[in-house]
Amino acid sequence: MPRPVSQIIGMHQRGRVVPHDISDTIKSMLKANVKTLKSGQFMLMEGDETNAVFCLLDGWLAVSKRLPEGDIQIIDIALPGEILEFGSARASVSAVNVEALNDARVAVIPEASWEKAMQTRPDLKRISRNVRSAAQVRMGERMLRLGQGAAAMRIAYGLLELSVRLEAIGEAQEGKFHIPMNQRMLGDFVGLSSVHVCRTLRQLKRKGILKVEGHMSIEILKTGVLREMAGVDLEALRSEILPCDEGRPSVLASLAWA
Amino acid sequence: MPRPVSQIIGMHQRGRVVPHDISDTIKSMLKANVKTLKSGQFMLMEGDETNAVFCLLDGWLAVSKRLPEGDIQIIDIALPGEILEFGSARASVSAVNVEALNDARVAVIPEASWEKAMQTRPDLKRISRNVRSAAQVRMGERMLRLGQGAAAMRIAYGLLELSVRLEAIGEAQEGKFHIPMNQRMLGDFVGLSSVHVCRTLRQLKRKGILKVEGHMSIEILKTGVLREMAGVDLEALRSEILPCDEGRPSVLASLAWA
DNA sequence: CGTTTCTTTGAATGGGATCAATACTTGTGG
DNA sequence: CCACAAGTATTGATCCCATTCAAAGAAACG
Image 1 (cartoon, rainbow over the protein chains, first blue to last red):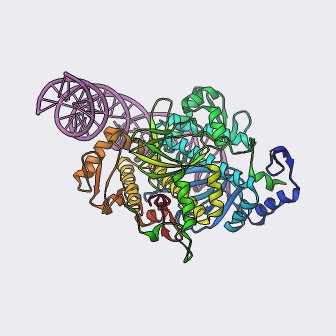
Image 2: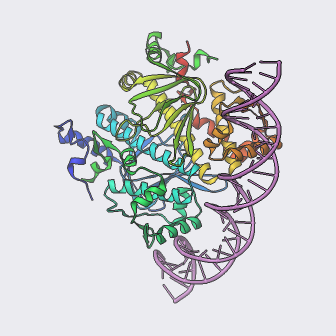
Image 3: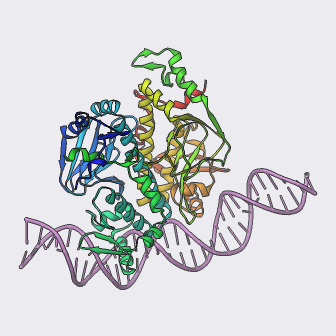
């Protein structure tokens, strides 16, 4: 489901059309080393060394952390177009686990190539920053609800966030989308036990706010009510968590689709 | 309490000594526009526009978000040396509140100047990235405990994180430090009610793990036990949440101390 | 078709919130 | 200097939401 060319970065800059070969530089960078992950496979574990930048081309990744007791919290969910830079302050050691939630393809870009590309391509730099700040904002939103919100609010926000992000990349239409996670994982995402995820979803179903079919095929029926439960301004959320470039929606991964 | 010159960035690069006037470029950038904040004053509110980069020179800032119901979650606490970039994906609109927890000084740097400085100073770029990833890692740690940890663990981790970070900038010695927050704010930080913060602190006091005097003067007596409760590897934490450059601890703010 | 994993539902437990009342601290102006 | 006010800490009692335990369906899978 590729997007229209007008939404692909690098094809236009301030009205001028950029030669295709420049855009192809990024394309080739993205295609140089593509890692294929099967559903459930770990791309990275806490403590692993990495000095690469990852661009998610296809599929979902869960970025998570684990307590000594074994409890897991999903810190963030990466969707196609996400740019992942790990390594902590001192060394290039990952502080998180990264797991494929379904079959995924990830472009692995050596830090040096990435740096170089950023210098020659100001649009890439902008996009990188926008993708990063989008991730930061949505993590903040989730943190707010983890700390202060009740179960219904956490679930409501989680679903709305996914819905908004999925719509932007064409993986959701009219509030309908599929989540490649079971209820246990969704619980790890919103900070609830799987049992309580089940109960909360049931409530939403009974109130006619959601429709859930099979394994996590979701349809949001009453956006307004859900929005209210989540305590979020949908328009503001969209503008904050959807990466854009020069005012247009942008998905870096779309470059590798050709 | 300035740090030894050897720890100040820009004075050495791969063994070579850099002329002082280059380092002075950054110094003058930091000093060009310094904003003074009084305790309790807001530097930024959700919805405000900013296209500047902030460097915290002195004092503590709380970065927080608020639910419609009024509940507040402190997303992160900025300490001297922190580099703050706001603005979300699409526009330069802040998604957070930033409040001074005590009297603070912040260098306000126009995005353009910042970009320019980053290009001419690779060390600044490295530091900026390290500071950012440190913030990311500690937010992840807190998110993990917000979602999965009980009250004692949240408090224990919160105190340990602060202790580690404060020691690195000389604001804590031998586990003793002062927190410019009341129990309500500490609760907003770790996701607990003020009442429960009080109870949890009392437990820690009774067990001889902590000493608390007056308004939040803390002394960690049994680091091992606290570390255990927090479920954290102290050494790993240090290496992940303390910004460094070229293997040495670095605090950008120290440049403005001269 | 049996096995495993996942969902659903019930019942009991428990942790933290909330409500409420009492001390303590700090700052203010008389 | 004291009295008062406002904010904060402390503690008890109660309530409620979410976890845990347990068991029975339902779906996926080899």
